[in-house]
Amino acid sequence: MASFAIEVTRLALKCVSAISPEAAGRLAFRLFSVTPSRNPSNAKEKAAMAAAAPLMARAQPVTLSFAGGWVMARHFAAPADRREAKRILLVHGWGSRSDYLAPMIEGLTAGGAEVVALDWPGHGASPGRTLTMPEAVRAIDAAWRHFGGFDVSVGHSFGGASLACAAGGLVCDVPSHIAKRMVLIGAPSEMSWLFKGFGKLLRLSPKAQTALEGMVVRLSGRRIEEFDAARILGMLTISVLVIHAEDDKEVSAEHARRYAAAGPNVELHWANGLGHRRIVSAAPVIERINSFIHAEDRKAAA
Image (tube, rainbow, N blue to C red; front, side, top):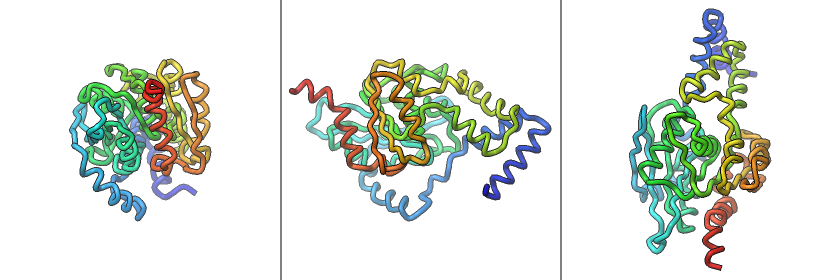
């Protein structure tokens, strides 16, 4: 049974749609873009924040500006003995924050890398209450410009899809940014399913649904069908590691299979039993990412 809030939202959108489906679609998009509360919602999240605090305190905070706003990033230097350290851009998923990636940050820096962890607009230490894919791509562009590029990009969930869209240059006024290697964890392979699902949840009329999806064109200059991360990866020549759990209940494993079928440059690693969220802090997953990141270095040293 739908919650009371959803029932009220459905009724309100139905009334608006009767007068103007276009207005109903725009209103639905605003609702779609609202980010969850950034405060820990349960004891487990509070414990994760507390555990991450000492590590996060060691980072250098960096403010990154882009057209329409700014975001906060945290810069973790590589170990002092790693002069040729790889620079990694690490991005979290929807409703998360960099603090929840502390185990991965620690594992990547221990593996010899320099890490830049980015908080999306409306998340973590960044301001705002909304987030769209074009904003995410612009935030990636801001990080790229400030740090002069990245050897590796690693993204969880929405973050992984955003990295792929940034690599594909899908926001018309932002250049494409392609790292030498990319890691996507529990990431959706295309955006249409999210919009279709949201419209179905709110019982939008066909015209209101068209208006909802039309907002993507207004903000990015691209149709929603073009935000196909799997198609983008298949067009790239870089090595991509896709990590997913078949028991992921938030992003279906079919998305991982779409990525794997995109091209020979995409490697799929199943991390079954770790679901959608625990996967980012699991030691075997972090170990697999480190192995992928430093594979060429090990070959050169052999």
